[in-house]
Structures are given as structure tokens and as C-alpha cells.
Image (cartoon, rainbow, N blue to C red; front, side):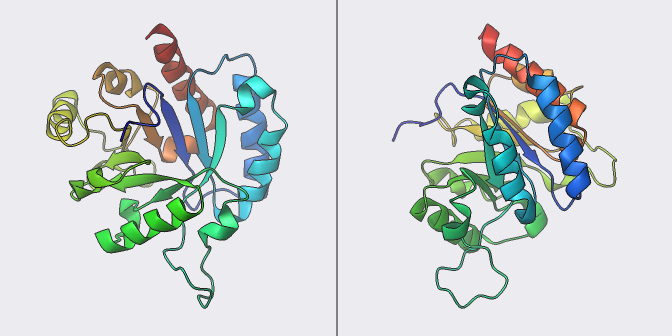
Length: 235
């Protein structure tokens, strides 16, 4: 099956368990201001906590049409359960009214391959595009109609400390992934920030990035968006 996202670039914001109502009001205001004059050539996916999905959905519906079509809302997770007797779970059938994408299998959740596959199926059943995270479980390459996100748990920033890989390490990752993910949309995750985004793009393998802690700074996240957008415009 062909890649439904062929030649498209993505910048995904994973806000994790961060922020409150006032924080996100200010974040959205700053982000909108930063990109208001930007001719978006890439796709932006914003993934706040479940309770803020409706807020994000409404806030970005008000954008101008030419920008709105490139900005999407996603969830950080989705229930793998199919039946209704699961107190506290948030099912794909609920989420589909608010989101287009969902992160599944993030390394912080320490889920096995079977659990991730069930979440993938729930997304497919509800027309939600999975952003499927992987590290050691490269067997996910067999999945179709999804975005993949490579993330080494050792490279994910903790408490503001970045543990980014050096250029040679990322080159080796690309060499390992190329045979498995040919014609697939693959993002890079793990301590992504404005200082290293250009090096990641220059490898000409990754179709964008999954941004964690840096997402919390609206201006830094906007800078990443601008760099990726500029790169896409030149391509």
C-alpha cells in the first residue's frame, strides 16, 4: 500500500501530563501569534491531555482556512478496550469527535506489542490516524495507514535535562531503519529542540519530529515549526 502521507512533513507536540487551563490559554495565544503570518506547508499535530482536547479543538477551529487545514488535534493515548465496561478508559469512539490523530505505544507507558496493536485497531475502526511509537519493537513496520515515531527512551528529556544523541548515532539509527520503513512516514522523537532539528532534517529520512518537553515553550515549539516549514518549502 502506498504511503498516504507521501512527501508530507509533520511536527507533533506531546504536552504529556503538563499544563493547566491558564497555561494552555497562554500557550495557544502565543503560538497563534507566532505562526499567524506563516504559510504552512507542513502538518502540525497538537496533543494535550484528554481534558483539554475540546478546548484545543474549539480554539483552532477559529483559524483562517489556509492555516486550519494544516493544524490538527491529537490525543496522547487511546483505550485498547472495545467493550463498554471499562471505568476511566477513554475510547476512540469518544475521541473521534475531537481529534484526527492519536499517539499510541509511547515508551513512557511501557506497553507490549499486543496492547499497542489493539490501540491501533481501535484507531482504525474510528478513522483516527495512529502515531505509533517504537524503539526495539521494529515489527510495527508491518502496520499500514499510520505515522511511525522512533523514540529511544534514553534520549527522552527528563526534568528539563536533554539527552540528545550525537549526529553519528542518529546516522546509525537511519541505516538500521531504512530497510524496514521504506516508503513509510517516520518521525524522530527524543530531546528534539530548535538547536538540533536541522541536523535531523538533513538526514533526509525522517518526515518530521515528535516533540516532548520543548513543546511546553510555545516560542521554541514555533521555532521548530518554522524551521521544518522552511525546509519543506525549499524541498
